[in-house]
Length: 137
Image 1 (cartoon, rainbow, N blue to C red):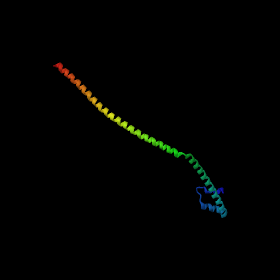
Image 2 (cartoon, rainbow, N blue to C red):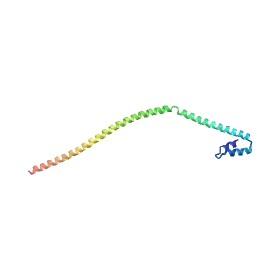
Image 3 (tube, helix red, strand yellow):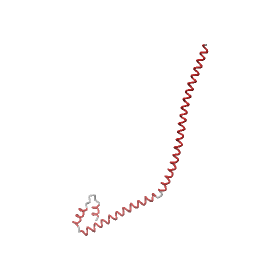
Image 4 (cartoon, rainbow, N blue to C red):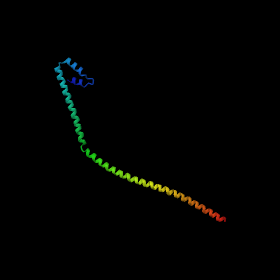
């Protein structure tokens, strides 16, 4: 029977060739009994594999218990952080806008100062000219 089981597991297994080979060595009744034994062996192996997978599934489901609560808590936490982040973005955006406005005002003040410095230099130059004219007169 071990030889029969091995034959079934070969990648190049051909049922017609197997039956023809076995029929030449034994009668159909004995071949039927042998095939039934092979079927029973395969069923037992299948049940064993299913039980192993089921045991693994049960272990995994046991490990996953409480995961939904953890996921829910994480979602709630992330929702809170999202709200905080939106508020922070709004606050930063308003601060950036305020800084941009101050920068514009500062640029205007720099331009006015530059003009004032030029006017002061012009006034100083005019005073010198007046002084020279007064000295010449």
